[in-house]
Amino acid sequence: MSEDRLAALERRIAHLESRLDTAGPPRRSPESPSLSAAATGMLRQAKKEDKLGTVGYIGASRLAAGETLWDRQLSLADLLSADWAPVAHILETLGSQPRLALLAALLRQGRRTSTDLQDSLAGDGEQTTSGQLYHHLRALQSARLITQRRRGEYELAPQAMPQVVSILAAAFDLANDPPLFPPIDLPSME
Image (tube, helix red, strand yellow):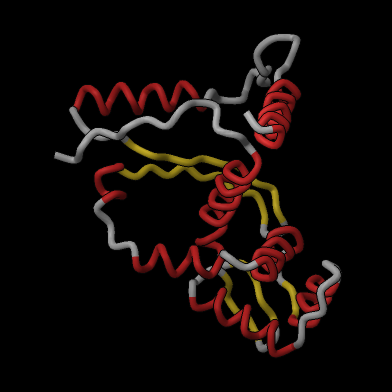
């Protein structure tokens, strides 16, 4: 094994070990629901109905726009047979650091003017022209992720907030968590 691969493996092991809680399993507050129990119920239902399963996401937030609770479920069969064009458009729109920074500013602070948003991008150390800012804002509007309330004033589209936060959380996990299990083969859709 090469030294580079061995060093990479040691870093991954150290990362996993740092995530272990030596006091036992993670503790939830008594009122915190078990997501594992919900997922187990979804799997049990899929087996009972001989279906592929369900993907779901839940959340709770206390952001500038107010308090929000959400839970969504989608059949894996429906998801895997969906038209991917609108999905690709949204993922392409989100595939930009300035756009993610704009969404983060709107999530944290609520409604913002274009000047505020320009300043938030400059705070990341990158100079963004007003033309670039409006290019990013138009792309986010086209994907229905933000709305323009008045001229020069933007906010996260209320109906998009749970999905945006869930996508960002999933992408964060993909970027930061090493895989814990080997990949598995999915059953065929027949």
